[in-house]
Image (cartoon, rainbow, N blue to C red; front, top):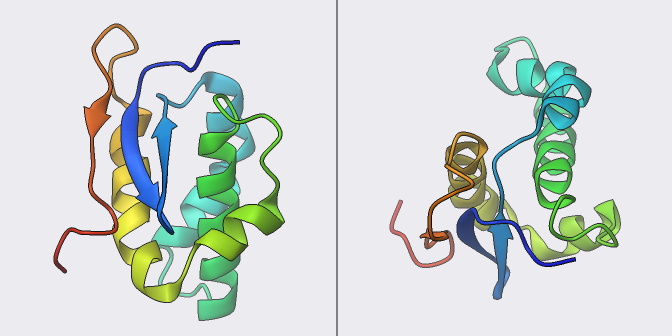
Length: 108
């Protein structure tokens, strides 16, 4: 299977192409996406939700990627840069050339 177009995201030194979110992933991540924006969500729950959302977003192009692998690539520092890039990929056009996001190198 060839990779779907999307946004290039550097996570822990590995560049992934995050494709637009499909409807199934959108439905499966509803609670986690809501938790990310809920001020009542604890920090631990917010981190868990973010990891699950990043993982789910990567699965279309990387079906063998595990949550443990995503957790090992993410740090507190890069998660703050990676998550907005992943969110940007959700609405990227599947018909365009892959975009470029620099999650690891962008200044905060």
